[in-house]
Image 1 (cartoon, rainbow, N blue to C red):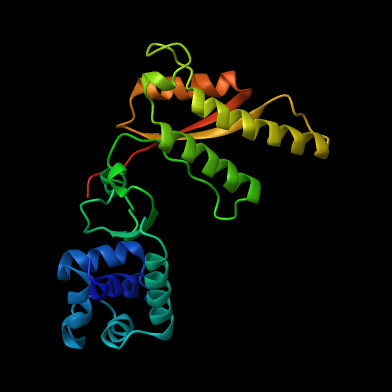
Image 2 (tube, rainbow, N blue to C red):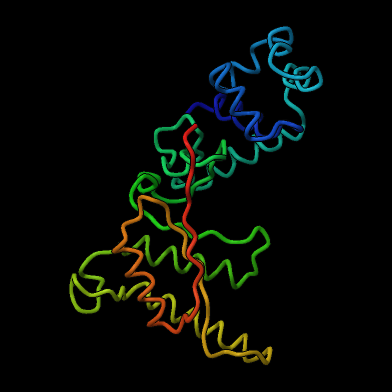
Length: 229
């Protein structure tokens, strides 16, 4: 993707008063973001209220230019940094099929894996430092190892995933210490497992079994479902 095309996507998501749903409607009408900004005021007025049309017809705001510059700096910082948009083939199709897919994704790592069978680890916008570190630990263990027979405790038919268990047990010990320090029940921990309708049943069973074997007595299973657009 060329820098000008990236800039148009970033400018679109930085436009005040233009939410994701409205932006997707504009994209379905005009095509790529560059076409929206090149359409001209009179054309834009046919598709939206005048204040928004005038905003899109004006040059990029200072906030948008700052966001564009910061993104270009971030992309140049490491070879595995990537910006994905709804128009990219690498954009995860399971996410695209949901009712409200983000216009833009900031990715770190191997983006070719995004459309393979996967589990998502989703946290709070205001996650604690420990929660963020736990999520990174879980993701790194699964991403680096995969779910293959050589990572099972006793061969391909076993349910116990050794790298995941190692990560879970490390996080479990930290969680136990925190709970003990706070004087609350530290006998077990809990986790959130997120999957969609493409996640194999066997994989879920393996993850849940490994959780149970790692002193995670409680879990929340969330299944993503998206309607057709």
